[in-house]
Length: 336
Ligand code: NAI
Image (tube, rainbow, N blue to C red; front, top):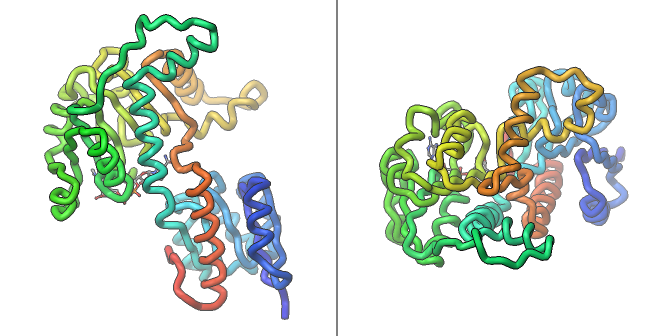
């Protein structure tokens, strides 16, 4: 019997070690640190399964090269890095990892909120310089403050639960309300306008799609309660960049904690920018990001909200399960 060959992309050493233990000699495994894209698509010409993370670009041209491919098992919830229509057309199945880090992303959300509310980032920088003065470091309590959650789904609900532990009031905007949750967790659904007007902290947890593209924008940014904190661990496109910069510049947002931000994908390429042709638009985005980085009331993290030991283990477990179940014709987390 021929071996099933699996190519894993964007793999760390720890993940490689873990995966090697899970597959026996009936499998031929290939591990690549790099992303899969058109340039290295020859790497998948003979494999039966591809397992990428979100930075691979599995487009039609890559899929054309993968003549023996049966399954793409992405190690992520999102699958917009895969040409699903093309995969369907050439009868390649796609599996994903729908749940792995609701609490993980919610905990990171609070890491950003607390860093800003208690000026932890500023204190850290100062004390590394042997400056232990309290001046300018006074924070504010979360107890009694109003948290506005935009998108009360899996992650948003965990955020609400944690907020309740701090004694916060919570309001949420979600076009698909779940009223059992409001009783259980003691929060209210409100309109987007009411949420923006009344929240001391606004936290984004909706998906990014055509309905949420620039959900916060130059037309509604001025109704935000003056001095609110803005936290975004969802996707950068849910707020219009101009509105974000305007709100920070004009103290509409007294602070921002951003795990996702305009141009985050460019950051990876930045080291090669001196030798590459870079568009003016890209340079502008990078310049703005660098200005944001210099603001004391802005914290950027590199899209790491999902990245805890436990969440990554859950991603790996589900991916392995998806591959075995697909091969054994059992149920798996099927996208198509
Ligand atoms: P989910 O699908 O469980 O919840 C999303 C919620 O948003 C749903 O309740 C939905 O009804 C609501 N929603 C849909 N359209 C909306 C709109 N127009 N306005 C307000 N709410 C709307 O998704 P989950 O698992 O909670 O994830 C939320 C988002 O978090 C993901 O779409 C993803 O972009 C982001 N995420 C970020 C990670 C990171 O590492 N920074 C990791 C994982 C997810």
